[in-house]
Image (cartoon, rainbow, N blue to C red; front, side, top):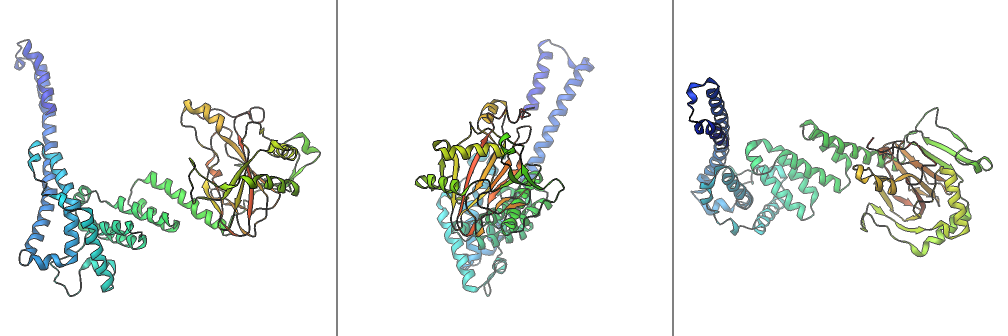
Length: 494
């Protein structure tokens, strides 16, 4: 015991000097303090043992009750699938956890406990038992709740499914791809949760949080954001991971707002500062040839430039991209349904027409594009979409700041090369803003604020194409090289 060792260490100097501690009140206080520490640990140890005994007693009493029911007719007893599934699950999943619990807290003496040949029961046995019970449910036309309460016309032996059994059935259904029925079993698992002592659920690694998380993942996989929000709100009511759940709720609300925008329900940002005007200020040339500008948002800066690109320029860059179009990838070259498009990179400096367009992009945006990437041409067919994302990213620390400055995107210029008959809206969920593609117009927004921090409000997406063909071109504006154009940037570390 650590405190006892500390007590000995405290007494060793006294013994070495052959000093009688009883003659010194100062030394006796040190001894008393050592004993106090020892008593504290003894109390903690006794409390832990009592807690373990209580938990083990609950498990044992439950097992004894089941054993008494099986003694009269074991064959009939195990023939009931409401008995056989929990039996297989307990021996395959719970028994090992219980033994591990006993060994961890009881010391070396418990190493002699037998494994009871648990390796004989496999995952296949559990799957077979689960499938048999589900087949029984289908045959009798029972709901999950009715089945959990017992089979009609059968000798019950107090046979009831509990939370761990419902979770095991849900996991089996998930593996089969039957998510909807699995979700019903998880909801029943929550309803039955109070029937098992909390300590036992913790020991078996089953708690409300993990069950609710499974339900959230099921809803999210089907993009049922209303369902996700309802479960997350339930988690908040239970006081579980409030900070993390609040962040998830914010993301879910963005998804819901995105779908509202895609259905044409974007909110108009009414403000005296939002107006249509001619842009003559972002470049000297615009004093001679001003651009029609519609201010959609002041903070963050979002504008729509009308009639910004000529029809011949649109056709020119589309033709340049056609030989290079390929399925769009995300991350490290991965095909993902989040980005269901074809894309290609076009070097505007390769042709005189392209260089003219690139200069106009600089004029309308007020940025220097000399260090920026090539123009990205993107084609969306029927159902084509681009899920919510940011065009910038956060710096993690000062060491990453050089790469942060070199590679980050301070702004985005989105060129609409075609009209779209139905769908294809550019959505800004955090702003409640939706922009319908208009051939020849350019949508410009600032991804970063004046402190060079990525602005979360510029989260955006492309709504699915319902009818038509959507061609857009994206020019990302690199932060690097903008010191002449935007001088008030400072390090995120400051």
